[in-house]
Length: 390
Image (cartoon, rainbow, N blue to C red; front, side):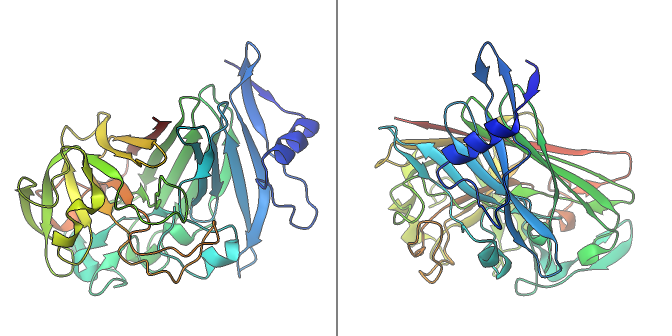
């Protein structure tokens, strides 16, 4: 299938058809719309619009991806954030299923990693330090005594270079960021790309890629908050969840793994069979889930990670990944003080996260799958979210 560049007229028509998908800004028309076509069917479209400007003066864009079934993903190059994801329910009614904002200013003011790329190292690093090749590196402690999601100014706060890409699978957006040597205390210049593709199989596919000029560590993920009933539509306690994991990593009082890996059997963490999220949440220490699960299967090959269904809408999301673990989080930190895209407050348990990644604090646990990346190696990982309804 060969890509064809749409004309300015088609771009304008696509923008008008997206019901709010374009921000007029200062009267600027959207640009960079691309699509591929064959036998009269399009692969979808991408529309760029102005989203804001950082305090340093950098322009921030919003990209609206639409596949040929009408699914829509909105992604900004600020932090690679998925701001909205519109999918149909069992009756064909399309709704947004991720938490977020319509305004860049709200993201810039601070938020709990809504939809963002977490890195250079997602999750926690114990004691905000690690040793690599005999040298100790000290990091910012931004989560108690630990480093969380890359530090104070991680990848979630960077303006990435963005390139819409023609593919036969569906509209695709490639984001690129070069993290300089020493940024947030991490060694090596890390050249990173994250590509979002909204496929015509109704999947949001995320491909991560990174190379370095010095030995370093890397562990990337997407931190979307999902509510399959629709953004702002209550809690996710009745969502039905299956996690393809027999084991989990035990952690201490600051959520750093002890090194012990235990079976989920007989615990509130046993989601091997489809179970409502809220059925045993009261039994979890801390009042909610925030645990790393050890996925069944080898690291590298694509495998089933989890499956979630909202019984009210019938929406279902299946996740497959090449990663060894997934952090399951039930938005325990939300308290109704944040109002998002829907105009409704986000309550505690108002969403869930399934962050595919390597285990927390892996660099300090040589028995865990490694997060070390060396010159000449390429970090590659893929996660696919497939949407359906029944």
